[in-house]
Image 1 (cartoon, rainbow, N blue to C red):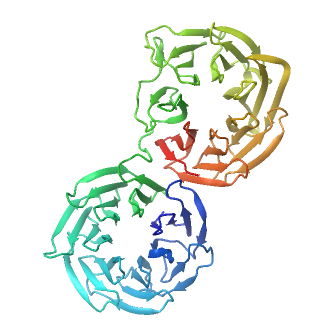
Image 2 (tube, rainbow, N blue to C red):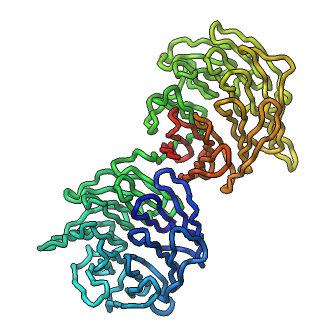
Length: 587
């Protein structure tokens, strides 16, 4: 993603990318809205006019385009050409009356929204690089390779504001009250110029590498910058101190913007992500080294999360990803198998060697746990605890399903699996009323078919199996996720083909399927009120469970492997290789 702009009412933002599309996004939920404009070639720059009057996009080539927020292709108007021969549009700015363009040959030009060329400015030996309109649209701040200048909107009056800090200006912004200007320079510095006499200039060493983007808060008291080092930083205007810094992107940051209420900072980068941050600190998304995070479970009332890692270990952390414990373990070593938690989070069951061990959350590793022996050479592959916490379901390596009472510890049933030991259990889910459970198993078949999946639905009465009452759902593909709706009326699955399917658990009949257009889905979770499905894959996507329409979607630095709803239904947590992400959801 190359550039981002926000409507003046703060209701939506627009990001443009190299694939030639402009996407409308909700800055709170990350959901895409209907704006979907495709330009002739790649987009590189974007400007949004005040009062929601329109936006302008530009990129390779001398033409640029104006759009309205309620209209898709084609553009409202194609304007230009900008600059000289073989030039392209490098930077854009828009007011309610005018559009300013900077071409790659350094030409600054002014246009009206009808496309009429009004003025032009060229500085011999000092190419213009960026431009911004003042809040009233009557003057411009213009950055160049060597200097910063102020110009009237018709370019007839030019005031020099001094040299750069020794490097070209990559971006420039003006405070909302017009009292100061800030420029982001290729040496990593920010230069702040007061517009009240004596026009004092102060500097901030902001980034390791070029500073590439800058934006000013609505109250003119702080600013945000982005750099090629992949970070986004928030700075106090008066003290020039860094309030907070985000490890925002895996590559250079291309653009930053601030919502009109000042609560959110938006960033886009080379990695293709559009990131939304809390301007007060890194509360919205936690990213960084994920240490191989693979799966996440909400424990109890969500004061804790359990995060499973690719090495098989499980750690407890708070909802912001701060680790609260060393890996869960016993006196025999760390647990490297499946882990399941009781509904209220007071205890958990963990697969260990040829048994399942039960411990309380705060139980010391040296204290002996309760042990459920599974049998010789038999290990647990998936676990689940009943909604009332009275019994456990264990899918074992022999292909069977074992049911155990919690107190006293006793096996109550063993249900053979249709595929036996030639399969591997992936997940177990239990109906909210405890009257049935489902086990998802995989097995590999040689040839073109590869992995196939089987969902075994077992009917229960008070934790006991109802004889000869099973449903089998067979799929010739790898299913990746398993979940049940809060009312127990639907069983849901996801697949590597991107399908999100709903099944009738009583009959095994397929009710509906929607397909994620972005590809494989690795996991899913159903909201506590049963209205929404969250899926983890290339995007963390939220679907309307009835219509199948996307309500929200947000990207991380890489694919997400697991997701879970917080108990209030207004928060989502997801994990992937790069770390843990916490999002608010506001339907």
